[in-house]
Amino acid sequence: MQACNESIKKTQSTPLQSFFLTIALEKTVLRGVQCFEDSFSVAPRVQLALEQQQSSSSSSSSSLRFDHTDVDATASSRLPISQDLSALFADFQATLSEQLFESQSNISSKLHKIEQSVRDSLSDQAAVFKSLSQEARQESRTLDDVQTILFNEFRKTVLTQNATIFQGLADVRKEVDAVHAKVDIMAKRLNDFQKDAEATKEAHSHQLFEFQSQAQENHNVIHAQLSSAVTPSFEQRVQMAQRRIVQTVLNADAANRESQEAAERDRERRRREAKSLKRRRKD
Image (cartoon, rainbow, N blue to C red; front, side, top):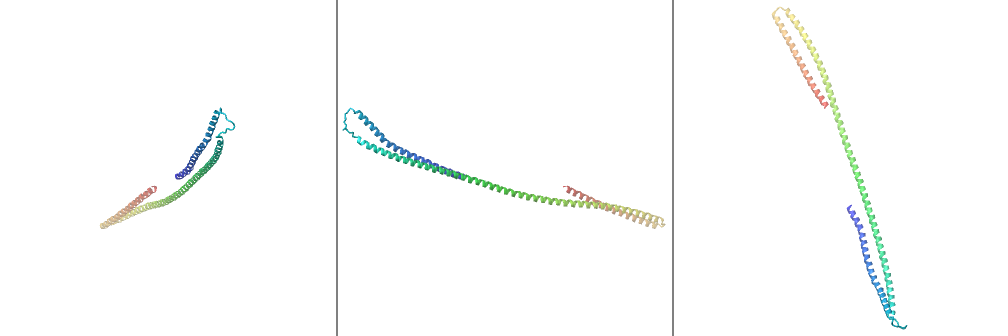
């Protein structure tokens, strides 16, 4: 842009400089012509002064008497000189007029050329400005297109990333739902196991109660049978049998208690696992 402005200033300053140089040259020529004209105009003034002086001298010497035969010596020579000067002055005026006309023509031609060059410079400047404006518009359009393309690419990238994120969230939700389903299944199984354990405990308690009742009945029967016996050795056998039966009942009761405690520990462990799974599900 700076180079274009400098070139425009140069194109504008060159015709103006040539115009000023031409005017200066024309003024110099006109001064020379004027001096030449003044030098030629001195001769008629000198001649006029001489004629006035001669007329005054002739008037002063009018007291002298001349006849018609007296002839002025300068009269015969003054007329040809005056005619030569008039013809020379006319030629000089014609030459000066021609030179002035040529000078005016040259000045007009140069002014026309300068005006044409100024117009050409202005038209070139307008063309340069137009080209620069068109280039600026084209560059702005190109920048707009580039920015639009970049924005579209950024938008596509963001949409792709959002789609990937949403897909990942959907997958995570599916996995969480699957974990929740597994937790529900395990909780249901735990409840079923607890129900089964409680049912088993009740069944074992019922069986133990029946076993104790049966053992008590057997003990009563054996005691009655032993009471009806007469020999002491037989009584000893009965006591031994009673002790065996009592020991058997105690062993069965201990085994039942151990099984109940194991079932209770298993239920407690499963209950803690269910609580921890519920906490994880809430988190």
